[in-house]
Length: 204
Length: 152
Image (cartoon, rainbow over all chains, first blue to last red; front, top):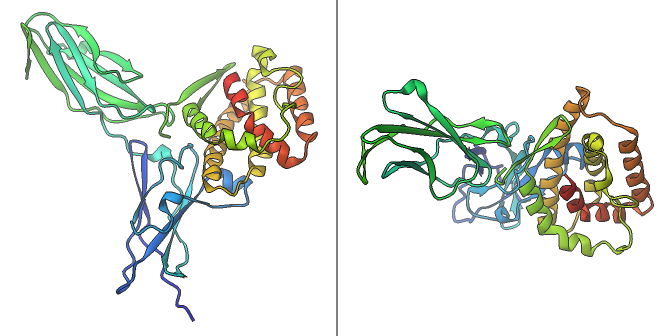
């Protein structure tokens, strides 16, 4: 009689900046190739579709122990996830993620940015993190921390113009991301300061 | 949520909906869903009057009614053989569920008034829906999702 395989263990989610990955510990069986399949269940399936589960075909019978679930986990509801192991026709019980996962809990990191002094123009170049992301850019003249100004950037274009600078003055900039769908922001990035000196920007 | 979100102002109610995600999901399945709809001469949402004829004051309640309609009556009868279709329908259904919850909260705070027109409109949608067998009606309604999205 076929011995059941043990269910995958240590099932967890890695979610950063609205990209979500399911991971689990590999099952090691001598001289055998172990494959895995992943399924998800949203709140809709639990409440309106007889608690049905939906397979993720990109993660069906795969040897990897990581599955990108971003495309399917697309609403701000609670999702359940499970993984099953296969060796040939033998298969394990489902290993289920403890509790639920919702995109609301994703961790948000500050954006990568580059501050440029183009002549007397203070510019910032922001990382394109996808359409779900907006940016709050805060900038001030060095030494006048009490007079910080703020600009909300809804769509990342190549470069954002912040201000026209006074000659010889130094200006500082920091930025954070904002995701409207989950109404949360990242922490602020490191502050970057530049000073104008004719046409060359000087980092401080 | 990987795609752009949009805040819908329905009267005093604000609903954040990942509209780009829903449209992308719908566009991915639209052709095959509409191919399964044999009755081209009928509309569930637009017969006899288009959604666009609705008074502004009734927009919020109609949106709430239509979210209810899709969540309670439509999505569950659209199960497909194709897993890709099921994943996209799940994505839309869970987004609608999330949006409905926000609208319901607003409704409970008496900010999403239901007038005669919104009740009549939903009544008409249900009459159109019940005029067909349930699978055809559900598939046709899902195929008309862009009518709802355009109206919103």
